[in-house]
Image 1 (cartoon, helix red, strand yellow):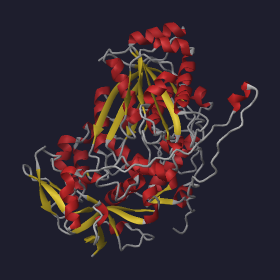
Image 2: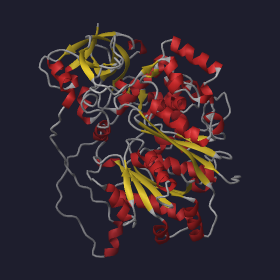
Image 3: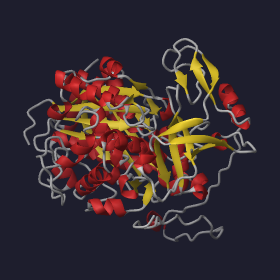
Image 4: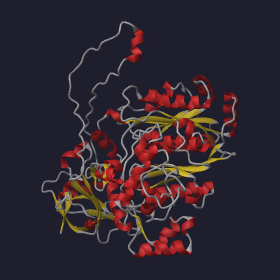
Length: 176
Length: 456
């Protein structure tokens, strides 16, 4: 972004391996000791089940967008919920249209460590005709250096990854 | 429910990183400060306390489960009763209310609510990842994975609905950072201009780095007591304490995924969400006009949880018009935009009027040069301490830090604690603290009130 200072990125956690530290002969010196800081790695593979939401992800793999609709009050959820938040009844699976409108958006110039390589990207809530709630997605094909409130209301269409990764990023939207 | 008094509070130094101490020792700093303020020795405090409530947000930041008990034993409070409270960004505010419940219910006469967070154990962008795990990991985290991005989406909608501007948001940053110049506990004490805020690095459009609070290490602790507990503490201290009472608490919630929130019609808004002060012919005409322009509630631009919490707390405290009846508010300004959104939720103004309120002067302190031209005099300073943006946001401590600063305002002891008179709200008798989680998922509001004379 022109006109803005650059955000400094954290230093990385590489360094020497130390197996010993100095120790004072006079124990009174211990209260003045600088803190010892060690590297403490942590890595986990979770076994994450999408549970009752699984059909949504199966839909993505088949280039279909699935939402739900309450069988009692008719409230239509663009991000699927199997239990209706409005009345508590069960919801049934329904297909969403593949065209939407931008409801709200931002351009992420920074993010969580996992997504830093993707920055900048346009993140948006999109709305669908006939559905009462929104859907979080990324928009491609817009210039992230020229954001405008006029993007709100813009018509966008769904695009799908050819080889599904079974993640909500299997779908994104582009201006129509 | 019994009346509950707030007796004392302590805050540790908030800093980007506190490698000098482990979290327990940082809690002890806040605990010892709250004891010293009462004029007691730690041994006396341990005898007086019936138990505690502990708060911290994330187990990930420390890679330590059950940190609460490690604080409890470090403070010397075992084997007294305790439990841990967690509710995202509202963790500290919920902890304060759990302390209130412990006393109001008769379970304890003297309770200490303490909270902490040590966020420096991971690097900033990993920290953002941990915080973003407080969004739906099936649908939200993999797409956005960034809270500043979530808040930025909400504010683009607010801007579109109401014409809120980036300069109005930047003015909130100027106000809070300037206030913090006189608060020695604050992490970022800066004299900024609107231009400085806009020129700082863009994080998630339109929010810049100076629109967003930072991560911190820190702790805070607050004493709550019944009338009997107060008498017991006064007997030990040998002095009379100012009567600062919890006048009312409120809480609200909303869906984790902001995408799921409703967009209700005008009639539903008036039936379920409008405040008593909005229920006038003029108020109805104002909102009718908003709905005619396409406004729906709460959507992603407003916090239904904040309104619910505030309405409940005000009702219990007997407040009909928060702007007229509160002398100050310490609210959860994790983002400048969310301070503006919260003005509206709390009824300091109507929905859509938050942007203009942010710049007209009413939420500023008298007697501080902000380098701005303000059109109205101060009425209800918001975040006189500097708020989260300037003080820092060690999540589990934040809501309790607000309680401590609010207590000092009502005791009229800000000059002693800050070493400066400028942040003391003149003749403060009643104030609100507001703690907020997620994208508005858990919100707590507590109203504190000075009961006795309280002349400054």
